[in-house]
Image (tube, rainbow, N blue to C red; front, side, top):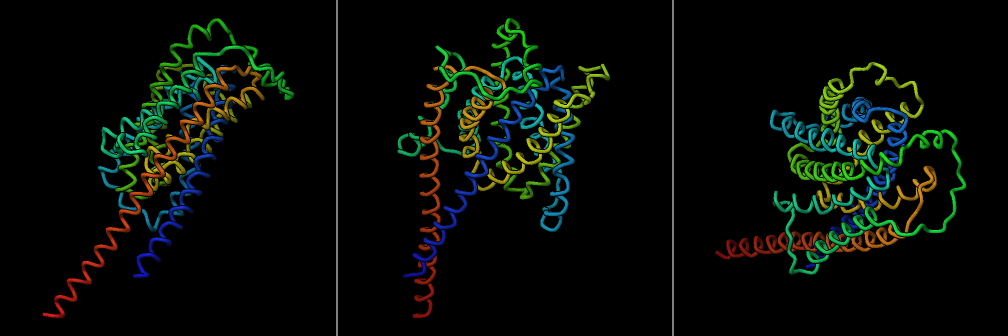
Amino acid sequence: MNKPLHLSLTERRRIMEGDITAIMGMVILQFCYAGLSITSKLAMQSGMSPLVLLTYRQFFGTLAIAPFAFFTERKTRPKITFPVLVQIFICSLSGATANQIFFFVGLKCTNPTVSSAMANVLPAATFILAVVFRQESVRIKTKPGFAKVMGTIVCICGAMLLSFYHGHTIGLGESKIHWPYVERIMSKTNPTNRQENRTLGSVLLLCSSFSWALWFVIQARLSVKFKAPYTSTTLLCFMAFFQCGLIAVISEHNVAAWSLNSPIRLISALYTGIVCSGLTFSITSWIIQRKGPLYVSIFTPLLLIIVAIFSWTLLHEQLYIGTVLGSILIIIGLYGVLWGKSKEMKVEEEDKVEKATNGSQKDDVELQIINIK
């Protein structure tokens, strides 16, 4: 009778350690993506085409992750079959090409804060698609299910409030950090044109979130059949490099548009490729394999707060009352969804242990009956 209890305690300890590792990984991801928003905005503000930037991102991302795939998974890598290649190709279309084209063009039309705010549609989009593909259940009549649904709604409401309501500025004063190079680049912004393109940019950012959510769902299925996240990420970036490159070559005929002579263009291309394609895709795939697609998406509200701070510090964007109110709602919704998801996962793990224990006891009883006979 002590053995099931021992197994239960060990299982709970393992789950707790896995939760801490996953949370730390997701927080690191949000800081990586915050740097992407800032550096990419500066690169495009300097005149770099978003399609060219994406092509370089996939190229450097492939080079960055390929060595890890070769050395760490060469002995454990499953066979790369045609169905696996098809799934990776679909992942590259949704999670890399479509998602990033929509995001970067939308970012160019708006600003980092708006792009991060619109990304908070991701939890709702992922939840909807996960339910459609039967990877998540609503269970709204249960407390965890109700918390998941309501937390997602609150996150979206906070993001919408932050995006479309500014209110008065908060008297934080100007940032003490003055970077002449950044100030010179940002001075090229045309406020009138930016206001006209804001609606289009918001729609494109919304499309980006749904494309990203679709990648989460497909990646969750792929990770079950092909448990080699580094290899799948390398193939994904390699395929996306040709996809984005073809689109960029068709739209950009000028050779000068591909130049990386500007420091911010070179830094942005290297950062988005090495960090935001190689590193983040690998971490995300690893976490999806262990926690599921919804777990990854519910951390995106943290990105909004980080980007808002960086935008005020480096880009000298003003903070508004709407920013604070929206951020508060996002944090409340985030913890609501986290609570609901953690409770569901805890119940599922306890059910697995209970079924295993009951199965073992049933086998013991049958064995005793056979011995008696």
